[in-house]
View 1 (cartoon, rainbow over the protein chains, first blue to last red):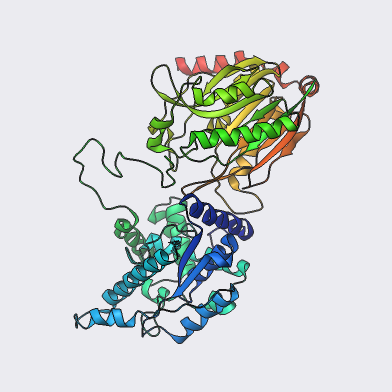
View 2: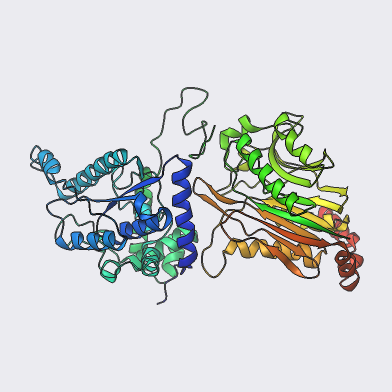
Length: 275
Length: 279
């Protein structure tokens, strides 16, 4: 079955996103960008876009492995960093993570995953301060919508260039950008334990997930209407539950209104605020 | 019977009037060097678009001192520029002024500030209630701001009122990246083409570029000739200033060869609306 997710004009998308990165950085008064690279598709695409937008000299990738990270992740991260002509920086987070894990013997895989994502966030933000740079996020639309990301972890950043592209669209863009095939074609993974894959965790392939999301979100179809298009009812309902259940990650925490003007409620300024 | 129009496809800074006046002056100097007769800037060119609560801080009367240098420049080239107007009623409007001969000639208030999806204009702006049709040295002129252009009933009415030159400043966000052109570009081309080919006007559509937060404006400004279609166009995404020549004889010739305006019978429309009202 041909996917219902639109095939984008990757050349035009790349130009647009590169302009977005350059302008958002400039309008915030920065020239440098820091990016946590994982060896996966999303960070490879964002790194390449940032290099094309800013010039490699202004981009600072950091690889942040934990002891459970696979050698394949390091190899692929090295491949994309090298392709962009950038120096290799690796900061192992095992010691800081395990210092906490030792205090919590019963910690499970989900909590560990969130802990690692938040430690990586703390490190990349510190690195960004060192480099006087902004952190560029690597979240895509699929994971933002189903909440397959850690709040204040990998979601924390100054901008999200590919946040409105579904994973399958990111894959197409990656091919256009010349990202190595081994990165484009490998199963996406948070790489928290051996054999972990996004699709195994979410319970559906990105190809199917993106179509369901596209119909529910972009086309505003009801779950029943999506099911009528040939998608399994239970799956559509699960996806809808994931979207609704992760809404808290996509908004600022609610602020109890007391005064006449409350941040986020009626104190409304653009991020690009030039007074 | 010819004159030159400069389409100033700029990237205004959000909320910084002084910086934007400087950008305008640079563009005006370029236009003067090119012997342009008229320069058209995008929607809210003097303030930026996604202002939100900055609206209150940047609203100005059309005669504000900050705009005086631009009005003065209009001694040498007519200028259409966008700003947040502080109405005599105290309400902020999304407006565009037309200045010529060193004087303010007309101010248009956007009639249809979009308020849905990514747009929230009516949260901050009042709504203009009048079609802008006024006489200039370029013939009968009209102004529509961005969404106004999509309201074909209003644009058709302006044609019925004899508008020959339609100025269409815009801040149109990019979306729909399938295909060789953006889907919104296609929509704009339909609107501009309809006004120009079917209604017989020159249309100067000027869109901005750059980003206000995540909204990216795509540019693609163009001058459309009733006879020849698009005769000048600016690139996508980049700042640019392009020139186009208006030949006023084309308006008359087009009207003679393709006499939509002559055929037009607004009593049919009036009758239909009256019938509907009485049903």
